Length: 600
Image (tube, rainbow, N blue to C red; front, top):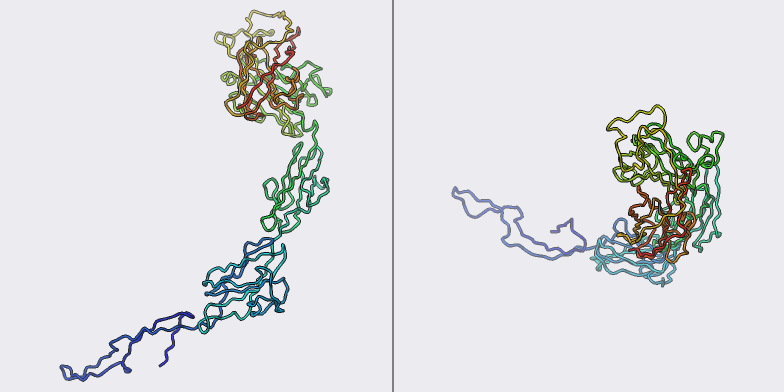
């Protein structure tokens, strides 16, 4: 009797067990039952036969698992071929140039091409070790030529010998592989300015060559942005170009600030390993258009509607206060006369404000606002204590809040269109009592503003019976002096900062400039105007307070300096003197004071 078993695996060993049974499935017993009838029953053999060992045959060649063979880790000179079989076996391979005639199965096993010529290049022919099924067989290939395409022919065979294995695949399998590029160079850089329908192409210097890694372009002051196109020498680098760390796969628009704009271009080759770095510098010219940080108009409006223009705030009188005025120039520098530009050399102003005024509004227009110049307002203790762009939300200043913080100076910082050049203007609030200024005055009532005094009041209110006040000035032609032990400079508690402490013999201000150690000594004027006259100035500024430095006053220099560095700090004092017309005529010290300090 022959029995066939199905569902078994190829080339596997099995144990067979067997019992026997009567052919008819029943047996009549010789015994008679209690009622005289025969007893019929089925009977199996009383012992198990086995085990009997048997092994199935394997006459089928192995298959590659789906998606195999494949290549990974492809570089310009190497790659890894990965194969995976459905059963235990091994793989032969031969690497030939693309388009070569396919070898036979026997030739692949022999490591030859279709003509029977042995493939001798290392790793281009071979056989893997026997590997279990469903396990990666790794074939490292080396000696590839960058960007060259190859045909890899493979043949698989399962393990063991006939009839239990040893089956070759009937045909070879071809896998195409292309070595990655090692070219990490550019083939070109182009830069254009597009305004509407007009396109201007800018010159790259020197003439582009992929082996030159630094280039430059010069543009005029009106060019605020350009379109840059970077072309890789190899298409495999497309999408692998970064500019200042940002991926740039297509033409992109880059903002161009005044001065130098450096673009670091990094190109990665298709193999992901080779990298080239180019530096491209665009230098934008500059002139007054983008470096002017002056104000054209400055007005202070009190809450009763009275407007103080720059002349009223202490600027020069007409006609010396302005330039460029039209037929309305007698309106002075104000919004009524927009062509009239205030004297930009005057940066310190005083707003004389009666005590009854609660708020003032600051209006200031940058001379080059159309070129991007901006104005920020700083008010101690207010919403603008850290600086706010001057607009309708920030221009109103509460004098009560200003008084409570011990302030008294409103600072306006103008930043030019180049975002670097700055100029600082100050408005000192000078509060005074009610006084008598003409007919129709109303005597103050008890408990009114006439009886009050605050930290800003610098002149007592005149008695209501006084109709005229004659001032006999005494001309001051001597500069102030620093009191003994002043000025002082020490390293700040924070690295890279300085603390300055001053006190004067009379009301005034102190100008300072921080220069590199052993730099050329500045003149008094150079200290006062260091921001303009000294290109090597690291930090410049003014020290002032409500008491005009007649009390000890300190200021911290927190920007522009480095840690553990020696600096020369130069200071010069100027008083608040006036001439016989009560116009400002300050006296500046003839020589500045030098202090040497090392930051933490």
